[in-house]
Length: 279
Ligand SMILES: Nc1ncnc2c1ncn2[C@@H]1O[C@H](COP(=O)(O)OP(=O)(O)O)[C@@H](O)[C@H]1O
Ligand SMILES: [Mg+2]
Image 1 (cartoon, protein in one colour):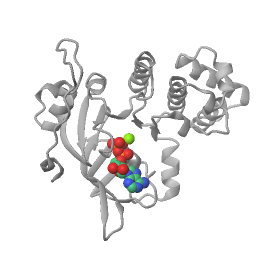
Image 2: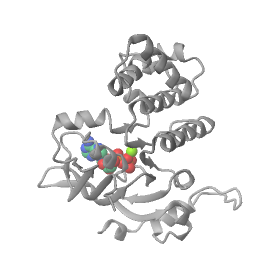
Image 3: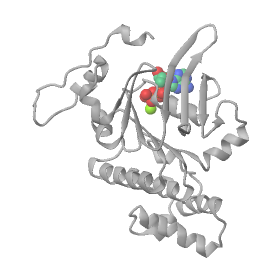
Image 4: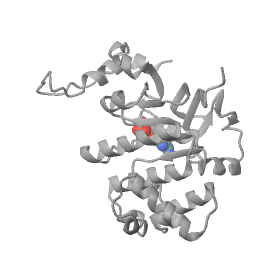
């Protein structure tokens, strides 16, 4: 059997000083193939840090180590900065919660998607413009010409995520890390963006690492779920097996979901146990 696309073994990230370290990711291990893998956990559990560590996009104060951090045979910890930059623009990609921070603020949307198009295949200006408009139409943007001329700050959240997905369609990454891509969106827009992400994954056969705090959402959207608590993976399950979860934190997350069938006056507060934070 060939190796999975992504192998993460014993990933550790700490801030603070070596004498007084503040560990935020503490020995996270998982593999990712052509599937949708969710990383869920409450705010501060280390999800974004894991995603950014894979792209080597953590601030310089972060101390990162791992027994293994391999993407398609490439050692992500040992790779040079230039190799990483090349990977980020092509085979490895990340969508952030707020697309305003992923898009270049001083370049219009059309030019940015155009750059991604040109990186994959050189073409003339007119042809590139048509390709960009076709991509915007693919993500169901109705007035592609108008939107292509806009800048990041002029886009609504949902529109921004559509633009990011159009960019991914052009760039054709093998691994996409989506960090809470729908958390800032209205429920109706959220469903549309999820459906587009789903199409992207199916069509391009890519591996998706989907970061979310919403267990209810990921259990329907993803194949597998890693539950993080205080920098550790406390449980790892097929999404279809979530009803068999055993860790009290996972059960707490499941329990705190509002349900139409079982109405509750007040959502229960998650109970925590210091023992969960020990290895
Ligand atoms: N630059 C930083 N310096 C110090 N601590 C940080 C920094 N970035 C994140 N952290 C801490 O790391 C922990 C995990 O953060 P994060 O990965 O963003 O969590 P999540 O995405 O699950 O909400 C948090 O406690 C956060 O305060
Ligand atoms: Mg986060």
